[in-house]
Structure formats: C-alpha cells, structure tokens
Length: 146
Ligand code: ADP
Ligand code: MG
Image (cartoon, rainbow, N blue to C red; front, top):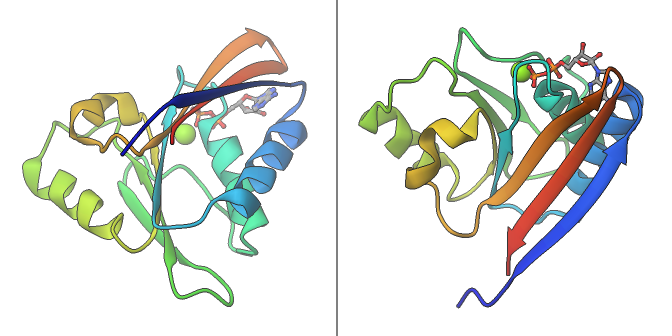
C-alpha cells in the first residue's frame, strides 16, 4: 500500500549537471518503473533522459522521440529495456496508452510530456517536474509515492 509521498528538490546549473542527476537517479531505480517528466519546451527533459541512459550504460545517442513517439534501448547486462516516449503529440490514444502501460510492467519507461496522460498513469509513477529558473538553471522536483 502507498503510504507517503517523498519529495526531493535539486537545482542544476548546466546541462552536464542535469545529465549527472539523471545518471545518479538511474543507478537508484529498480525497474519495472515509470518516470514521468513534466516541463515546458526546452525545460531539460531530454537532457535529463540522456543522463538516465548514460547511467544505465547505454551508448546510443538519445534524442527526443517527438516524431517517432517511442524509442527502445537495450540496457547492457540487464534483462529489461529502456522505453523512451514523448507523448506531446499524442491525443490520448487508448491503444498506445495501453501499450505504454504494458511495456511498463517489465521495463523502465520514461515519458516526456507525461502530464498529457497523467490520469492513466499508476500511483507508483515517479514524477519529476522541471522548472526553468534562469537560462542555465533548472529546478528539479522529484516526487515518489512509497
Ligand atoms: P525538453 O526535452 O524539455 O524540451 P531539452 O533537454 O531538449 O528540453 O532542452 C533543454 C535545453 O536547455 C538545451 O538546449 C540545454 O542545453 C539547455 N539547458 C541550459 N541549462 C540547462 C540545465 N541546467 N539543464 C538542462 N538543460 C539546460
Ligand atoms: Mg524533449
């Protein structure tokens, strides 16, 4: 049963620091897991996801899957994969949402613009809100229900 929400705030001062935060988080999480990212355009979601991928040992270059919607990466030495979604252009397509949730049962799923499908995501979703403070500064608020 979910008992409490834990909230952690971090400020990053460069894209490299954001990637480091993503890489650090990647080492803590134990899939299956959904990480939901919320920010404005240019907030740093993809930069953060690049850090997660690095932390998992993925060598491929991670870009925002805005047009392909889904990108799947194998994770070295792991049985699960990394599913990267960008649902900005998704109009609550039930088939696709069902597919995302199905993939989340056994894998790590990271969703950019996740607020667009918020009501479909489970309570266990790790929510990360990113706010732009200044040109190079971002405030990360990480919320976990445990
Ligand atoms: P999103 O996926 O949310 O649209 P991106 O990660 O693609 O955002 O873009 C973030 C932009 O902001 C990049 O151009 C990046 O270089 C810049 N940036 C500046 N400072 C930071 C920071 N602290 N963290 C992340 N990105 C930053
Ligand atoms: Mg992006």
